[in-house]
Image (cartoon, rainbow over all chains, first blue to last red; front, top):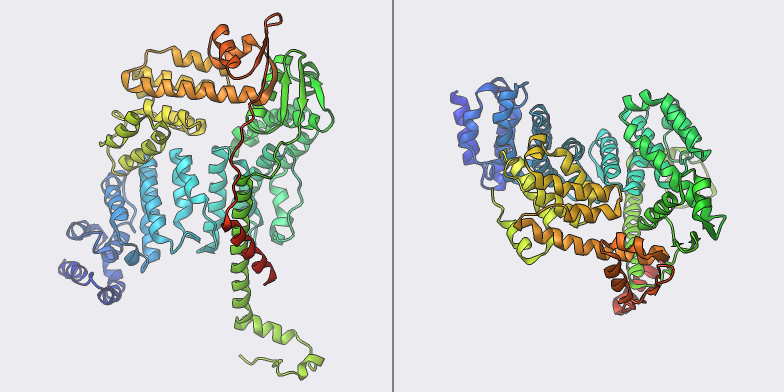
Length: 424
Length: 197
């Protein structure tokens, strides 16, 4: 116990300046094993430390405390400690030991889930993400943990806040897959289908040497969201998709591809019959809710198709074509689509007719200019980043070695001052 | 628990802020491990989401409330009824849900403000969706009796045909200021520079 006391004293003494902290870091790394062996007796030490000053020491001790499995009762006492630590800790100190911090936060997530109160973890995990990330463009291992807690606690709106950031740096590939998958689910919950599609698309097309389960589940949801949002789905994946995905994804998602094929016939009865026969499969995948949304989107799709053929149509004709029960039902469907901006039309109750209109957007207003401007700014920033990456790669030794080796000897250009072979 | 952050927006009728404030307070209370559920103003929280037209968040909030609390707070159930009617797009029933409960003093202002806002939103919807509409349906959508509804729309430029009990919708042209300033020229210069290099 004496060595622990000594360690606590060192933490308290060496936490004030940057130089002290580096020395403390070395000491802590050496003390790791002894901390692990004393993990059950570390709680009193925590009481002597202040998370807002001794963050680095605190995180090492917390990590040792949480490295052993604990019971529900122990979790109940530990969870508030960790929550307080996260809200008070100093980002500069915890970023010196990122994997320890991540480990503590992941155990924290497991504990709030064990206590069946995921909502307790939402605010602390968001704070943890913001303290760990070096910039808003950095995807940490804690992003998916935060999104998972939001999903479990049904705090979808809170989850949306971190999905708005553009990501340029990723710590681990698995984080990225989970971030896109959970993020997609949050967007689906908030009915932000365009953004959901973007995230799920990224999960499906991300580089992978072998097919992984996250990409498969993401593809299943991608198919359904594509039907809901675009009314169509194509099995063609973009060129930049990994060959593993191109070859194997479809095999795991056949029922969903068949669903899309049934959808494309435009016949509601057929679609519903297909879903009924395969109901259990969708239920096991936890996708039944989404499947129901696919069905209700079909009415919208069929009405939208009418706008391509007709300028005006009677409510009775709409009801007949789209298989609704009455002109009044058709009127309500059209009204809801107008409310959601999915169609441009006016209803003439006197004649019982609907007139389909063109999109009135003239793209001439100040707001539209602002919108286009911000998109251009965003793309320019992306373009600059790509140029920077391109320059970095051109200087990369591995790339130069390969490029140098592949060049033919005695090219006409070789009689320049450009060297043709690199010995690295 | 400190609800002082809520009193100011409620007093100044800035109801659009209620949902965000409630969300943050709830997450803070949950993080601290406080047993907040019994004292939490769920009805105000729910109505805050409804006011901000975020029915998805209202639904998720409703799902997360323990059933014991739902059973013991009739005002909360009445508040959710409004959300339910909005979710199923039962346009006329929303007004019934609004008027079908004797709201407590705290909530009255919020509900009345929402009712006004909803009427305005419905009127905008009718403007964009209908060229002609019956007086009966207009009254249903605006939550008024037929005479009041007719007067409401007549004041806004619509035309009534008493014989057929039909209203013709007239849109009022809104002119928004379209001003461009020098920063736009600066931006265009930046774009050209970027494209050239």
